[in-house]
Image 1 (cartoon, rainbow, N blue to C red):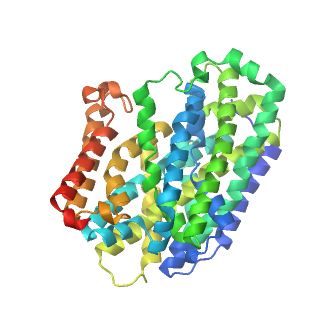
Image 2: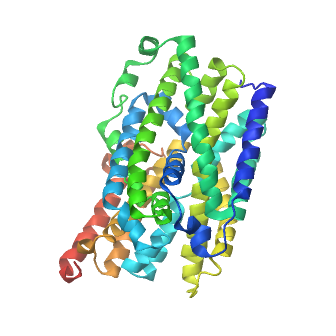
Image 3: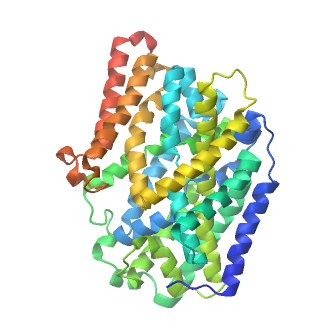
Length: 465
C-alpha cells in the first residue's frame, strides 16, 4: 500500500503545474524547421540535458529489470548503449547535422527513393511509439491519485500532449531541461536514506541472491547478447537524429553525445543501487515493476518521498514527450506530407498536430494490449531495428550504398523476417527464445536477411560504391 502526505501531493501537483507552464510558455513558429527543430538552435548545454533526459525514460522498467536480475541490468541496459552512443558520436553525429535535413525518412529519400522513405517512415513511427512511457506514467499516476489504470492512461497522455500541440519542439526541449535536473535530484535523495536505514554494501550482499551480483544475473549468453543487438536501436533512434539535426553545429552534436554518456553512467549507478536495495528489503514482490515505488514507501519520509516520485515522473515524461512529438512528426510530415507530394512545408505543423492526436490514441491502445514495459521494449526493438539499421547507416557512407530497389527490399524483408519469427512464438510467451524456431531470437534472422539482401545489391551493382 502506497501512501502520501499532503506535502508530497502538493509537491507532485506543483511539478505538473510547472511542466505545463514551461511547456505552454515555449513558442514555436509554424515554419517546419522552427516547429520541428527549434530553428536548429540547440547549444551544448541544451543538447546534453535534452538528450540525457530523453534517452532515459524507462525508469520503472529499469527498476523491474534490476529487481529481477541485479547488476546485470547495467550490463544489459547500460553498457551496450554507451558503446553504440560512442559509435554514433564518432561516425554519425557530424554527418547527420551537416546533411541539414529534418528527419530520418528525409535521409532515406535523399539516398534512395520516395518508396523507401515511406517504408522507413512507417517503421520509424512504430519504433518511436511512446506506449512504454505512457504505461509507466499511468502506473505512477495510479499510485498518486488512486484512479483506475485506464483513466490514468488518458490523464497522463493528455497532460503530455497538450503543451507539445501548442509549443512544438521548443516545448519538448524546455521541459526536458527542467526534468533533467529533477531526475538526478530524485535518485540522489533515495540512496542516502536507504544507506542510513539499511546499511551499505555488506547489507546488499547478505540480502540479495548471489546471482544478482554477477554480470549476467544468471541469464543465458543469448539473452544478454540479444539485448546488445537491441541496443543497435541507438544508431537508428530518431531522438538521437532529431537532436543532431537541431544542434547548432556538428561539433555540438558530437561533443554533446560524449558528455551525455558520462551522465547516463552516473544515473545508471544510482538506479542500479536503488534496484539492489529494493530486492534486498522487498524479496517477494509480486510485481517487480513496483520495485522503486515500494522501496520509497518503506524508506523515505515526507518531502523526500515527494521528491523521489517527482524524479521518477520527470524521467518518464522527458522521454514520453519527445517520443510523442517524434511519432507525430513521422506521421504528419514523413507519411502524410510525403504521401501527398506537397511542394512546400507550409502544412507540416498542422499535420504534426494531427499526428499528436493519433499517436496518443495508439499509445493508449498499445499500453492496454501489452501492459509490460520490458515486453514492449523487447517487441519493438527486436522487430523494427533489423529493418532500419543497415539501410539508414549505409545512407551516410557512399561506399555502402546500393540501388533503391535493393535498399527497399533489405528494409522490408529484414523487418518482416523478424516479425514472422516473433509471431511464431507469440502465442506462447513473448520474449522467450525457447518457443522460437531453433531457439533463435527474432532479431538475428531479420538482421541476416537484411544484410544478405544488402550484400547481393553491392555485389551486383559495384558501380554504386
